[in-house]
Length: 395
Ligand SMILES: Cc1ncc(COP(=O)(O)O)c(C=O)c1O
Image (cartoon, rainbow, N blue to C red; front, top):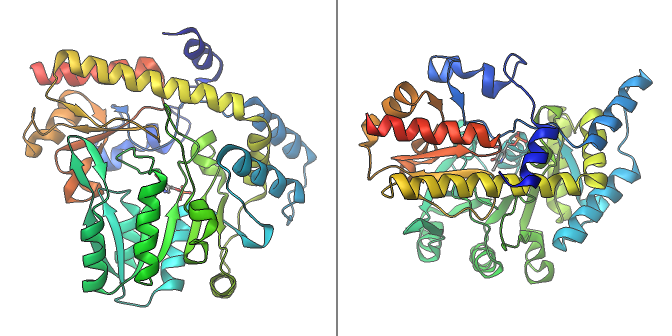
């Protein structure tokens, strides 16, 4: 293990079993046993940056946790992070707070569409997008990404054709993309947003993974494409939660540049009395934005290290397993179709290798025969998972 990665692991890795972790202690309902190596839920086995823990302790010690405002310092820290790292320009009046990104997607689907309206997703994609659309009695319209030897691209022709044919009103895009690990290029986002503008389709851009960018890939927010030309058509969602392992602290951003949409959003939130973020979550996020950059660099090196290990081992031992190149997120997308019949995949992974993974089919039928492995864990766990899969294939 390279030194920097070893240092990161030494400093931040933490035992999560028996800490009421969904990932470690919640496998029984979905996988039948908690006695598996969890490579599923998208959170990590690492403590947040010291600055986050310090800020939380300080706030906790104050002792009074009454109704709280969002301080100006929070906006400053968030805006500086976005501007300096990605060149994303934000304004205070655009920002609303939600507990989680999925909660906000559900609210927005209700606000921006009516029952039976068509909502498009690009599959395979993060499964709660589909659940939210269907649970709210909207019509799910799918455009499959094109899988070109493991490299995924948007199928613009199909997207436009289906938008017209199905009268799509809203598109939910995942950027960077879970599970296929793409960091969409400026030109790709521009083409997608142009189609949506021309066809009058609103866009929810879920950018929760935007800090987790590997290699030379560059993240650009949908809000920045063509200097903000499309932003009245976009609602951008993000949070510090995925980046810094803060998911249980329930604080995320809903960024709405369009004043008319903002008004409708505010009315809806008021009607349902929905939560708008959380004091502790805000304290943690502000500290992370101010002082978490070095920690994040360490995290990204660890992800790259784990991904390279996975790729190398599979290439050496079973080259028929195809790994999609990781551009962003910490989720490896692994094509098992050449080595195991999809009907036997669960048996192999769960019962023989004893690993809990997210199976590709939950992301849409285009994911059949794939598994998604969460690499934001120790190299030791990744090594165990890889060896267990290889052993299971040999037997
Ligand atoms: C693309 C994407 N959006 C949203 C979420 C979940 O966000 P939240 O916990 O804030 O609802 C995840 C978690 O894996 C995700 O991958």
